[in-house]
Length: 152
Image (cartoon, rainbow, N blue to C red; front, side, top):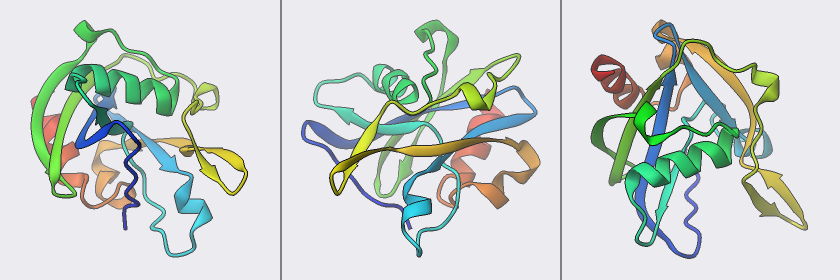
């Protein structure tokens, strides 16, 4: 079950970044998976909605920064395809890196309001071996990730 949230100014198109070292993929654990008892404890990619008039590449870079505090330069990203995710277009880019940053140094500056508190969108991060993607990521993302890895 994916929680759907569209903020004012967002459009129903998403973009994200598949971050890999060719052995593992970086996954984000949404805070919602801890807060809601029926929410599937699966990992997500750093991704999100485009804002009105925003280019998909710029949106992918912004969302990655908002959800991981990692900033990529445009030239470091390879466009791997447009997919359908939750019945909407999803633009996927791939960043092949040599070494992942230490997971304890990652943070999520992007928050949502829960009661009177602001809560980060992601609560933690995990490196997932490529052969274990189907066990750890949201099932809707698995074929997209596998396709993206084959085109990296």
